[in-house]
Structure formats: C-alpha cells, structure tokens
Image (cartoon, rainbow, N blue to C red):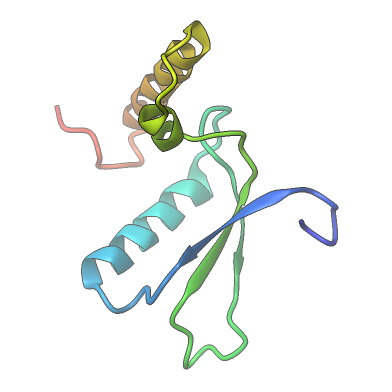
Length: 110
C-alpha cells in the first residue's frame, strides 16, 4: 500500500541484482523500457525504491501498479481457457506489436 496515495501497488524484489551480469542488464533494460512506455496494456512502473546505503545495496525494489493477474498465472492454471483468457492473450500480442512499432526498442527483428 502506498502510504501517500492509499493506492495498492505490487513490489517486485530483484535479489542480488549485481551478482549476475546478464540479470543486471535485463533489469536495466526493463527499467529503461518501462520508463518510456505508456500503453493501457503495459504495466506501469510507479517507482524505484532507493536503498538507504547506496554503496552496499544488493537488492532492487520496483513498484508497479497492482494487476489482478499475469500471463504466467493464466498459463500455469489448471482451469480451462475462457473467452476472457483468449482476449487477455490477444492483448499480450497487441503489446508486442506496439513495442515493435515504437522504434525505441531493439527487441523486434525484421
């Protein structure tokens, strides 16, 4: 809960972010993308919680808007796919199409 706005949020903790170079680069890429992207189907990055001691921090905390579910939960669920699930998947495809059209990312290959 954001104490200033009373808004429910999700906090993603990234453990030992600097232990693995690939994971650190992925985290940086995620931060850069989400700082610039504004789309109704892309989760909004609300804040990055800064450590108290900058020289000794290991974990990064990213604050996101709170969502009801995510694609991973839907895929792993034993429940059959409803029309709502299929619509959710199509939204995810729409997001990929949007990312490719922004020309700000290099995730899409022609």
